[in-house]
Length: 464
Image (cartoon, rainbow, N blue to C red; front, side, top):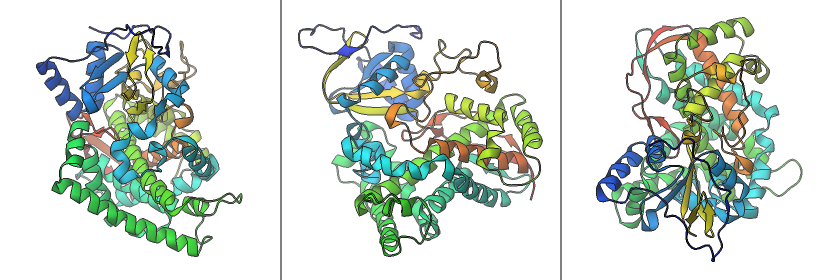
């Protein structure tokens, strides 16, 4: 049974006298609970999509401390974005706190969040994008330089390396970038544990076990390297012109971040940037290689608009309209941040259902981006749907298309992320010809949606 055309009643605050509301639907018998638990654990994105198709736009799973209420679709996105005072993001992203930290933008609330966001936004403004693009191109070329014709490479994992190195070097300078291998090892160890499903995560955190000890030790090593770089910058605050310097000593004279805030900002930005951006590049490459004629069309546009080998700039990337449509379409089908989570501070009503206080409330960009009433042929990759010149074109509103979130919680680095995705694709189109060898590419992951078994492809040509 499909619920794609379900219409919501107006959402309004819950009042005590309105205590008779329909029970939130969801799996309840042991067989259904086990089936959906398996699906949500294997692939949260497709598991939530199955919940939507089975139970509708307001549904719930689990009980007790792991009970989750799903509010799915553009009306839910709008309601939650407009009622932020009733929700705690820290409560929604509690599982990431052991690595991201208590003051990370993703997992903090209130005035502390606003103050830190106001400090970081100027450093991620468009006028600094060219510097980030240059780092992305350099590290992309370093990856491509090692490829050989006939070789099979995992494009997704190769670009995780390029994105991580570009992020660290452009945001936080050469000394931290020199520790990339050690940071990658420790971050991978931590994220392997934190990407566990909610029930598994709670068990690992509650019971002494080697996996959690490994996470704790890995985070301690990351902290040591990051705090050492912070101490160096405080001793020489004008040494580097990058994000970290702007956060240590804001140019407008405002008070900078504390060491703890800086640590959380650095670690969360590294993880969020390379986790989500590399996933978006992987899915973009997958789409370019599997949709008919898309790779050839994007390459022809590149030859026409940016001929030669000059590194792309933000202005140059703006001329690649078809590539931009392709990235928008890949982000629609495979949004790297495919869920948003928060904890309800008070009970409320939505869609005729009462959601109790304390509920973990989850929305899904993945579901919203595949609703047929919003997107004709929703499961098909069609860059042309983003062409304003196409008949019937309609610009999507911010609650129907939100790969980087919506409202004031929207990712402050979204312009940098899009530029880096396109810059990496430009170099890939210029220098290589690939054939996808994977036959069954499926999404996985909780903090970011990535190809479960990577993205293996054969290198048919690579140009120096």
